Length: 303
Image (cartoon, rainbow, N blue to C red; front, side, top):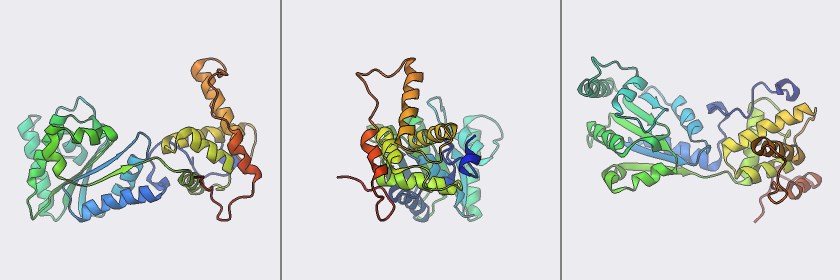
């Protein structure tokens, strides 16, 4: 709808985890480095956690896309509490068909495949997204599968990606042995105000648009109401562009973002916002538009 108006080649704030749009903030770059180091150091288990919408899946997709031919990768992205066993899911992710559906046949097919890949000079990497959904029994099954590795040789590596509940689950007494095998772990936090500006402008540029479409007041306001969570930033930026297009504006300011918030509140509650529960005010951040921009072109954070 608004692509031609702002001269975008693609949607800058789509919610799907497109690795091409990954913004390498200091913490996201560090998370990527930790994943890469886990592969290089042949760590049997790596843990990456973060709140909902923090960018975990985007990082993992970027990481997988840039792996070389030394790794055979199986991505399991639809984990849920009904997982009875990891074997059929891992086999499906790796494209392996067992001789039958029995537990023994599935286990043998998976281990034979992993050993066969190692014989060809390739390690197998299993990546479990939303791993907080895995039961303790299933995680223990995964630990036992890692016994294929010896002290000298690593044929199977596993990356667990999930919400903070996964980290809490790893602290349970039942998974004490598992936790001891995790040598690489990292937790993603929310973006700061400065990171939020760079994030927004990065995505605008990757999409082929001007990185000044969002005024500083708009970015400050978006950071204030989203708490710096990338997925929520994407939602607010996308809707703000729609509103700006509808009004034939060339730029998005705090007033546009405020209108998005008002209309979303009305849609949710079926009525105008209650005066006793006002939306976060855009007035304090709107003053940034009237001020001269920082010398380095970036929003400066306040202590």
